[in-house]
Every structure is written in structure tokens, then in C-alpha cells.
Image 1: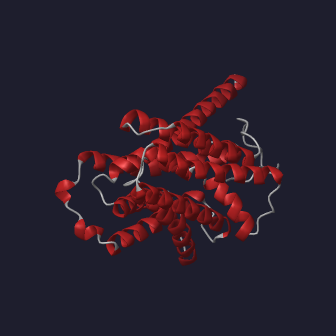
Image 2 (image 1 turned 135 degrees about the vertical axis):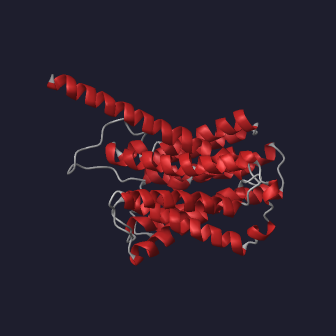
Image 3 (image 1 turned 60 degrees about the horizontal axis):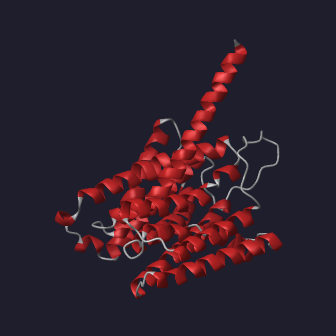
Length: 321
């Protein structure tokens, strides 16, 4: 009987793991198209600000309702810096750029984040000098980025599109710097609280940026479409609250390197969804560039992680990226 109970429990846990992975793969892979739809009639920085303010507020309220503590001023300061870099600078700029570039192209540029984390970690955050394999991965990643810019010639894009790509790249750089900063920052120990506080702080910063950029003054409520509102709701509920909850649960349940496979899967999902549902153009050069970037990420990580269970405390674990 005990064996049967353990078997049933193990099977149930495996099902939860599969569902959680499908959530971060499919949901996060589709958020790029959701962003593009949301900014069709919603100002970009306002939309991103509402997304993270609402998601962060809900997560913080749930945390407090379950008896959690309120972040200290020191925690809020670190959350504002980390969230400001990763979400205000990173996701905010991606949202702004998707008024100019396709969701698939934006996703491919964002896929370079692990490459920038490795490079900046070595150059400015006390990381180890990269070995030969890591250098090869960095070169491949940078070559893939260069190919993406070259691929724009296949579809005859203009200066506005190139500017959008540059903005997405800047957002990826800021996200990488924020990720490195957050590793040493004085953030709440519980990842649920640190995520909620970063989202809430970033949401407020984005709304301030929106105000300074004059988005509130230019907003015409009559022009906001239902599909943009539904896309925003999707980003808040699924992209932020459910997606991050699944992600944080996986980090505590399986190997961190296994969780990092979202860096390989999300861009592919984003390109496919953009092509199938929005008719976005996918060229051969874009496909090759995507393969080169993902190969660079895999090379830096060493190999595609095996789908193994998380090691028990005390055993060696790979560093979460």
C-alpha cells in the first residue's frame, strides 16, 4: 500500500512538473505576440506599467494574506534597481520596440540575454574569465545578432524597424545587467516576495516614464480595442502571475539548468506563433540567425540539460541563469 501511495505521489508530481514546463514554454513564448497586440492601441510604457503594477500588487497581497512579511526599505531600494533594469528597461523597451518590429524578431533578440549575462558577468561583475567553449558561444551569439540585422534586408525594412531592433537589443542588455545585479542585491530571501516587489516597483517606474513621455495626455480611451485589453489581461494573469509562479516552483523542484531550457524554447514558440497567428514574415536568414544564437546559448551552458530531478541539498548544483 505504501509503495502504491509513493508511486501515485511521484506520478502526480511528474504531471505537475510537465504542466509547469508547458506553462513557461507556451505562455512565455506567446507573450511577445500578446505585447504586440496590446501596444496596437495602448501606449507601450503605460501598458507595461499596468501589467507589472497589477501583477506585482496581486502577488504581494497574496503573500501578505498568507502571513508573509512586508519588504523593508532596503529591500524596496534593491527591488527598484533590479526591477528598473530588468522590467522597466528590459521589458519596457521591448514593449516600446514592438510597435516597430515583429514579435518573433523581438523574441530572437531577447534570446541573447544569457550571452550578455556571461559577457557582462566576466567584464564587470567579478565573473570568471571565460574558457574556450564560452568564448566560442559568445562569438556564435554575437554572429547570430549580426545575422538578424542582416536579415532585415530580406524583407526590405526601413530605418524605423532597425531602430526598433536596436531598442530591443538595448532592453536585452539592461535585463542582463539587472539579472547580474539581483544576484548580489539586498532582496527578500523568498523569491515570491522579491519577484512581487520587483514587479510592483517596475510597474510604478514604467507608469512614471509613461507620464513623462506624455502617453497619458495622448491617450484616447475610445481608440483602445478589446483585443488590446484582452492581451493586457493575458500578460498580467498568465504572462506574469501564473508564468512566474510556475517558474519559481520549478526552480525549487527540478534542476535550475533544466528550467533554463525556456531560453531555447520560448524564441521558437514566439516565432511560430507570430508566423501562424499574425502572419509575420520569417526568412531563411532569420532562421539561420536563430539557430546560431541558440547554438551559442547551448555552447555557453555546456550542453542541453538533462531532464533530471533536482539534487538534494548539499550536493553540487549548476548556477541558475
